[in-house]
Image 1: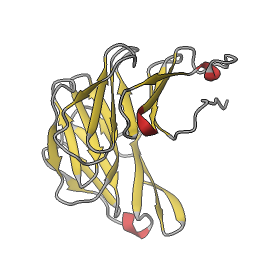
Image 2: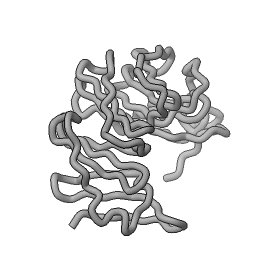
Image 3: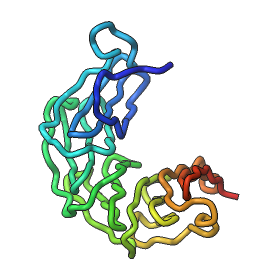
Length: 212
């Protein structure tokens, strides 16, 4: 079923908590939440309520642990945190000015953010502080996917696909044959250790690639 949020800004990221509760973030620092699964409620934005983040940068993704606590990330190194379900947000130091694209916590204390300029951010204390990891080039890293707290996949511009098996300390390139089909890789997901998918584009075409 298609649900609508009454707004004119792009919605860039969503975090699902359960069948009823979800949060979204978008351009110009806007955020939305639902507590009824987005079910249509006349005159209340189809079940979605907007909260202000008090920030004006574009927000690209969010991650919520429960209905109260979560993070959002965005342009210009922006990380913001809420502990009251999005009513109030506070800024967290990222130590970078690069745009931040995706955030994921495989376990509550360990989290990762993919970023512009070949950077990955990692926290080992639940997001209180973040360490910047440089993967060795300047490609934008558009997506990140974890399998447990130590296995981390990233993808991005110029056919970038890498994996770390030690929580981001070292990275192995996995872009063999990827450049034949995909120029920029926008999304990555692994069902298990051997079965994974990539989505991306090259020239004017869009592709889905599967591990073999």
